[in-house]
Length: 288
Image (cartoon, rainbow, N blue to C red; front, top):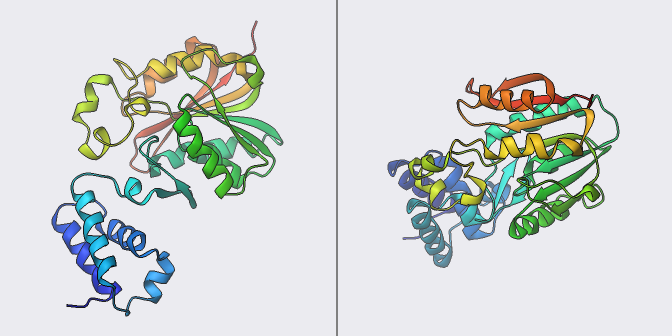
C-alpha cells in the first residue's frame, strides 16, 4: 500500500518508540530525510506526497540498522552541534549537547580577550573549535588530534562551514609534549577521553560498540589525559591564559586538583543542564 512521507515518518517514529528509542521523533526524521535525500524543510513541504517503493525500503533498512544499535549520526554521516551541520564518522565521537557548556564558557572568556589564538585539543570532529569560530570572528583556531581519520573529518567540517581562513587542523598527541612550532595560545579547550577503562564495557552498546575507543578511554581512573595535558601542554598556554576541560561524572574535584598542582589558579567549574559539573577551567599562573 502506498504511503506518504508524513505517514512514513509516523510509522518509523512508532517503530522506534516501541523499541525504546530515546529520541524517536529526531531519529525518524533524520532517517527519512537521509533515505529520501530531502532536507527537513522539504520533508515537511512534501509530507502529502507518496513515497517511491525504493525509498520506503531504504528507510526500513536504515531503521533496522539503528534498532541494531548503530547511532543515527553514523548512519546519516552528519550531526548538528551548536547550530552547525558537521560531518561525523566512526572515527570521531558524536557531538553531544553536554559539550555545548564547554563551548559557551570558552566563548564567554574569549569575548573579553580580543584577537587571539585558541587550541582545540583532542578535537575529534572539530565541533568545539568550529563552534567557537562561528561566534567570535577575531580568533584563529587550531584543531589538534592524533588521529589522521579525525583530522580528515576536521578538514571537511572547516571547509563545509567556510572557516578555512581562520581554522586549521594539526596532528598532535595530547599525551606528549607539543612541538614548539605549534606556538602559544590564549585559550585551550579540550574534551578528552575520560571514561575509566573498566567502565567502557558498561556503556550503552551504541557507544561502546560504535564510537572510537581511542576517544573514550581515559585510562584506569579516567584521568590520564587531564594529567598529561595540564603538565605537558602548559608551556603552550600564555601566562594568564585559560584552559577549559570537559569532565565526566564525579571528576570535578580530581581535575581541579590536577590543575592546581600543575600551576593553574582561579579554578572554576560549571554545571550542565542536569546540574552535573561538566566543565573545569583554570588560569595558567606565570612561572616564578
